[in-house]
Image 1 (spheres, rainbow, N blue to C red):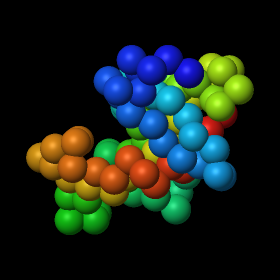
Image 2: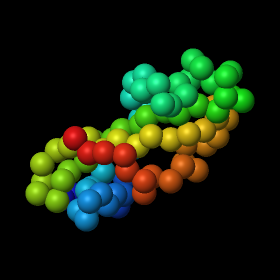
Image 3: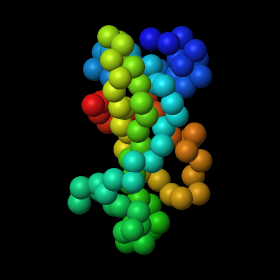
Length: 91
């Protein structure tokens, strides 16, 4: 774990383990499964759409991994206003 990364980008907890983020979250541009409203279909959902973001992290064992979040929002919403405590998965 790099202490300066933890101070700069933060940590997330998932399945009882703490992961240290190595960079800020970025859009994955992945098309989500049909149970979600993708950006291209936002007009069918009052402008609201689902999107995925990810960030590189270190596992508690020091192994690199990728943390993923899925959010629901609108274009004009500030990305810092989302709850990054709700991790979708870690790979």
